[in-house]
Length: 159
Image (cartoon, rainbow, N blue to C red; front, side):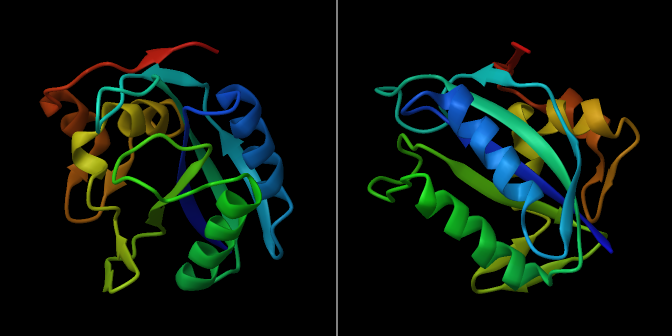
């Protein structure tokens, strides 16, 4: 089984319930199990400011699915929960990002691993560190060092 770290985010249509449904959906993926989940965090939107704050979290999934197959499954969960891709970094019911997959470094037209924005996003790094305090991100270094360098720090734990 591989370890896949998934970033979750929502700022539309009852975000807390969207994330709870997403955690449940992750736990029902074939050949996979939800091994851990972080607390929820509220953060300012990264993109356009004319949208609500986000709720974010991170999940650790143990899976036998290959990265691209897992990506397809994550996008299917997003679609099932009403995700519409209308505006880059715009509001959404659910965003599921494959952040890390074991120590794999991958540059595919559909998927880059580690996630290219992982080192600049406190709303990703803080919940990652909650689950794995000594996490090393391939090609980036320790997550704790990356968090210390984050210039935007808006993530606040809410539960």
